[in-house]
Image 1 (cartoon, rainbow, N blue to C red):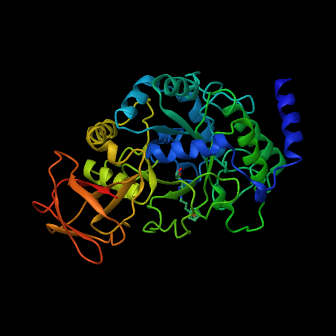
Image 2 (cartoon, rainbow, N blue to C red):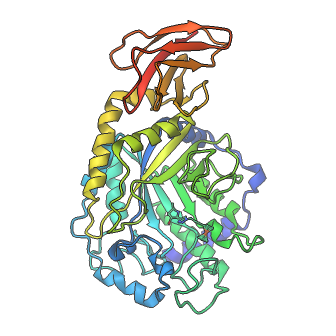
Image 3 (cartoon, rainbow, N blue to C red):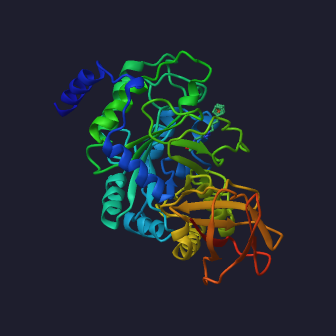
Length: 433
Ligand code: H79
């Protein structure tokens, strides 16, 4: 009954989708965007049945695993060590202000209790616990925001229209049934935005799967309007690797800082929306047993600072193990980042990209008249800052507060440091007029 009612209501509101061009973010949404910008640092969690195969979240399509065989993994999924309170505590210790959890990845398995498919963590596994509910409750209890990843593609469902990927999973009908699949997604989104308290963002992924089919209509307007109607403060994000569409509230970059394209997934213009870069802690999103190639604490901290000076957030990924624990190395990195954030957080949280643009030596963050110069890589004691049109009242080491001498010329100011910087990030705090 509830299901039918939902569908009817949904059909009603989708018959008159808000036109994308008319999208006016609500006050609540604008407030969320500011809070999102202030937060600067989130942790991404990729967790699904794929954790058991331990070769990353794309194994189903990479190995052309049959969808009915793959689904049998669910019967053995029992993450006995899962403890949402410990996850959240470890993540909070890093200084991260939000968690983005994969509610359903491309494999199609729902990591939450849904009425719209039995292929979910409660109904299809012996574990029978709604891990998303436990995680959401802990997030709210421990005061950290929760964002939800939601895949637009599905390699398991027969109604999901085939795209570039998931073609070898044995599903019978490449055409799928779009109306059915679209209703399914919107019904699930309604559950996610109704049953789990305030959700900071819905983070879509997979639109690029139809890049060979440019006329494919994802009907995003109706979907985005549904999200904004259910929770006006919920930010809509879409990892389509393109400039943002109307109705989206933040712009996402994958494996590259805004404006860079080393991974080949970017190249789009950088918009005025709040920015977020997602990046892996090792090399894979889902748990990969033989990937111990973790970035060092220094690399991770410098990446976070690199995002902040580009006015963006870092969404740093961890792939939890099949037993429900976060990998020990990841937990250690979280702790190391947290130690750094305890000291330097003031120069990151609540800041915006500073008035001196990023350079190979580092960059700046800013809060009002306070400019934080983040020196990440400088083989010199002198650092020129093109601040010709600003008056500098004061410069000092952020840690210790020792004054830094500076010289002014027509083009700007040169900081004269005591020594060549060797810290992960040597921060100079400047007071501008
Ligand atoms: O969830 C994580 C990944 O599973 C998913 N997004 C992150 C956050 C992701 N995996 N790979 N990609 C995104 C990259 C997509 C690469 C693409 Fe292509 C290149 C899409 C289109 C061209 C190769 C060809 C992969 C699909 C088609």
